[in-house]
Image (cartoon, rainbow, N blue to C red; front, side):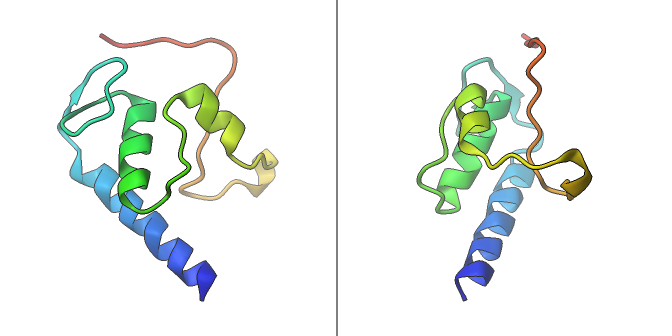
Length: 88
């Protein structure tokens, strides 16, 4: 089914994210061996077949469906809007 195929691709994206554990952080990087947070999401989920994942966190936040906090589940993406910090 389409839903099962989507779930499989999500798991593939998460596996790709896990495989990058230990890779260096670099602001603005999107792989394959250095990432920032949104770059890692972009890289992993594009490789898993999600062609419309935006590159930046602000574009990713606009792209995602919004849900109530009470409806959150493990593996949901969470975006914060009250400021940002970078580690360099």
